[in-house]
Length: 270
Image 1: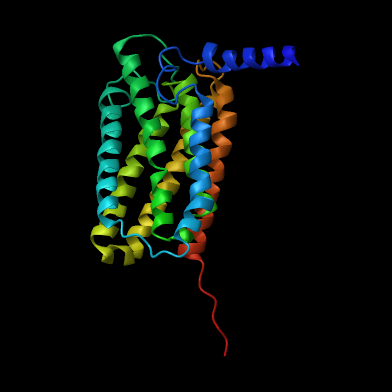
Image 2 (image 1 turned 120 degrees about the vertical axis):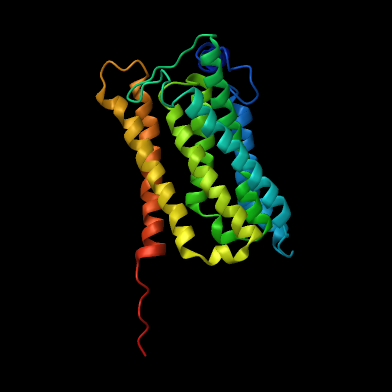
């Protein structure tokens, strides 16, 4: 038993200390699996059990003002990551390669900027969990779907792994695309709260779903590129983790889009 415990401790140190990027592993939540797993466990327990039980005999909370402030903060933060990335990382004239970009593990100014941007993006994925909490407190249980929970939980786990082991390189383009999409998405959310009539616009809702579908398609194409480049210096095995997740999300969003906007309602016979 003592030998098993010793090996378990040794394995833990190897995975989350020796293998973790020394530049990021001391940052909050990074390279600390129990912190992130505990946070996600609390999140899922609240939105699936504690929250519904709390709200069972209560009226929905009016969170309009809170949500407007929250959405505006999200727009600003996502726009910051997107603009920073275009100007300093992925934009025209920058050194990043679109087909295969290795991680720069040095302490150079550019490498640290990329690592910090990746960490800030990770913190935003944690902040995104508030979306579900708002649904529960407003008794919008129909919006707490499997697709919603899977997406938010999966993003926290995936980005945690990226910041812990690969804070930079090829996957950062995924964060750039996602940040732009979230700017659009949270703008829509803000408008629906401030101007409820916007919620009735099927065209706007349809556009938001379309841009989310396009996002997953572009991410799959971009990340899949490393599979066809044998000399890629970024670990190609990560595609086995990333691609199934995004392909699954693309399928789920396409299914939602088809059922919501394309399937004709059945005619009711007298």
